[in-house]
Amino acid sequence: MAAKITIVGAGNVGATAAHWAVAKELGDVVLIDIVDGLPQGKALDLAESSPIERFDCGLVGTNDYADTANSQVVVVTAGIARRPGMSRDDLLNTNAKIVADVVQNVVKHSPEAYMIVVSNPLDAMVYVAKQASGWPKHRVMGMAGVLDAARFRYFIAQELGVSVEDVHGFVLGGHGDTMVPAPRYATVTGIPITQLLSAEQITRLVQRTRDGGAEIVNYLKQGSAYYAPGASIVQMVEAIVKDKKRILPAAAYLEGEYGIRGVYVGVPVLLGAGGVEKVIEVELTAEEHAALQRSAAAVQELINALPPV
Ligand SMILES: NC(=O)c1ccc[n+]([C@@H]2O[C@H](COP(=O)([O-])OP(=O)(O)OC[C@H]3O[C@@H](n4cnc5c(N)ncnc54)[C@H](O)[C@@H]3O)[C@@H](O)[C@H]2O)c1
Image 1: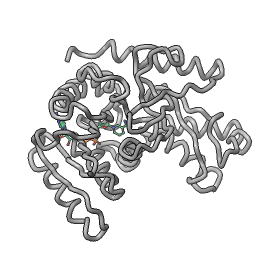
Image 2: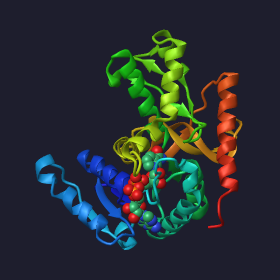
Image 3: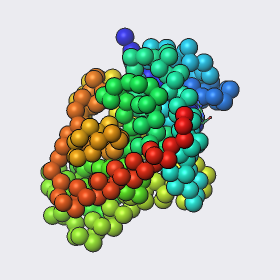
Image 4: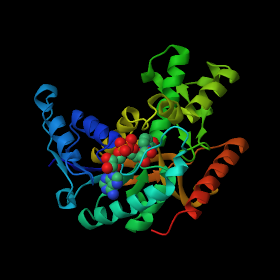
């Protein structure tokens, strides 16, 4: 039986994730939003491309959670996005209320699902989702690391003039200014980039990665990135519905790993049919470790500032 994938929020990110998901025939997709007509229109439009692109997936657009019942994976993109001059943290109050409301509906209709939260500020919103759902940590995770790592990998490939296919790497920490790219673990077909790029080049690429979201926001002027975020979500969905046991960076709930407890931060995880099946602990230098602790502290500060939901 096809997997049932619900995407909450039929805006830029949600609709683009739906597009990548059906193009890969990952399952039947339900797109849900509070705006009447928006998910219906986008789902129908996307479905009408199926004879051309040849995918056999169910596509439903709806405002009614009953249509999302018993989803295997639920992606939460509902909320407002950044505009120029806004940080992700500026979205805290509005999106916390939206995410808590959405999660209550998700819990009611898909009690066994795996939930991937995307709304910003990401690490705080996954925390809200975990609290609001009461679900175990392996079933509630956040998407940010796949996107941040993809940006880093793209910039490395561009700098070296090599195929993106051969560039691997990940980022650690929160999805924000305290993100911790890990150049020591970035490789081109196994060759550490520290052997291929100068320290100055690496610093520049790391900074561009950290500012990757803002770079797009500044170009678009309204709204934020959605093609790469949509693809990043779908890579995580694919890992779960196909039980691929991928090792991907994701926002995971830590209980002592990396010396961090009780918050969500980006770390490499093993992602399969059991959701976050394992948090992978890699060796860090004292400097990397300190940067990760700072990042976790910044996430904790946001959690402390959350409105009662
Ligand atoms: N984690 C990441 O890496 C990442 C990347 C890109 C965007 N984002 C975040 O994802 C979110 C969505 O971005 P976007 O560009 O798609 O925004 P968007 O404004 O295009 O879409 C958001 C959609 O959410 C809907 N919505 C609002 N409240 C809702 C509710 N209660 N129930 C259901 N739907 C609701 C809106 O009607 C809208 O259609 C933003 O918070 C953005 O910051 C995160």
